[in-house]
Image (cartoon, rainbow, N blue to C red; front, side, top):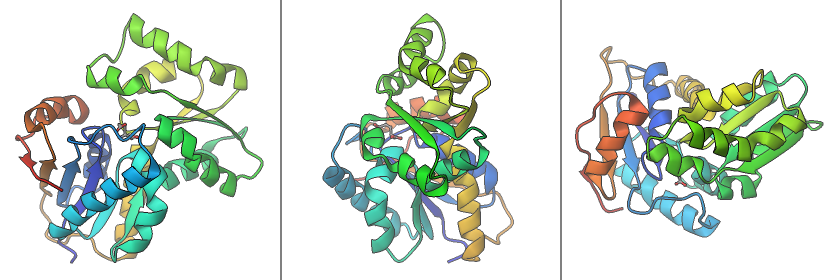
Length: 264
Ligand code: DGL
């Protein structure tokens, strides 16, 4: 069990921001990454659909004998985690709890902003965790659906990004938030632009927060890989492996081999 891989899944390539942080935090672990590129995006789909897709993705990861599953996708974490965490006999956890907890901790004035896909924002999942930790907190949220295609097109700065950032985030300025959660896999790539616009606001990257949580879970279960060598990552997708590999460079900062295609 200890030397089995960590499973990570996302709707596509965005979860590589989570993979990147987990690799950094746990360099000795092997990882199986699955990107559901045949059915992306998840960000505007219903709970029923996301629960179905996520269950199928985890069943695939279980075939690869993973010891834990990290739901890297914010939308899947928001809509399906309450179901998923109860049905498998290994730990299954997502990005929301970790990101929301950290935000509640670090915010001084307890005015916290959240950005994510439409489905994540509509689910109120981040809001619920924050308010359970800080009942008096004021939570402001906003769906930013144009950020995902911008990032996937590699448009990370410039006038277009500035205008869209202004359109989505100007209300946060008036609300006086001191902390903003990047509640979507893609948003860490826009972090510079976002923090430049919201000067002085602490930016919480859920990908980073979940890598710490992953370490904690592995420590609690006493399942650290003990082989003392660098871990390996295997990539699987449900469609478009070449497109995935090409975009991976943007998210991971390194080349990857063309992933294998699987039907889940
Ligand atoms: N991975 C999704 C998320 O973090 C963004 C892309 C999608 O809509 O599938 O919410």
